[in-house]
Length: 266
Image 1 (cartoon, rainbow, N blue to C red):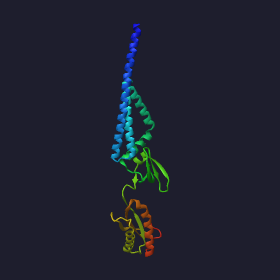
Image 2: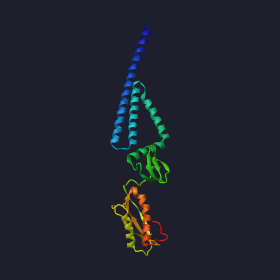
Image 3: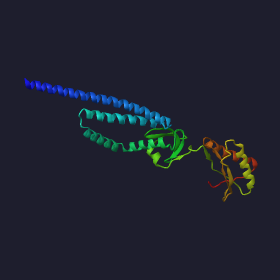
Image 4: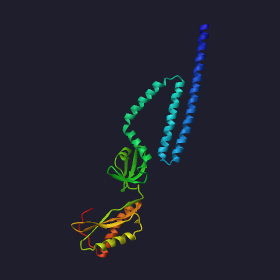
């Protein structure tokens, strides 16, 4: 009878102890989740105030939430008597295995975060890299979507865009147009330059500053080549480039300025 009484007492004591531990673990978990949510909101608002990209803000706030909840869960399991050291070792091994399996994706992900933070380009910029060029439409954590001038869609890995040399044609508000026009040796140099200046001055898209350059580039075998270097807003670059070549050719024809039948390219 005494043995049964002792056994019953031990069971009651064990249940009470486990119950207290379970309640403690549950309370720790609840508090940890609330702290995680609070920190998630704080990090999100801080990044928003800093005017950092919304994608990075969402990622960082979610990462903080997951990290705090994971640490809280480990503490709660320790409260229940679980050997957390071996559990952490197992999680570490799983993390290493996943990291090796997703090595390429992780490098693209890291590059995506760096692109969002350092901003070598942004949405609507026209960039060239890896022999391709296009307007940036979307920046994802793993890749970036470009639209080419002929309306093709290109999905480029972020690691390639970040590691290789990249040209951003939209980074600066102004761009210089490099043009070359050729005339025969019979034409008067000052007259040719004046015609070019008249065309440039009549186009309101040509900026006053930085100053435009018009001068003799070199003496070719077939004629004289003139370098024309006007500055325009980046958004006007392509339109002015093509229209200027057509307009100057028409003015040359109207003014009787003869051009070589074939002129070496600049």
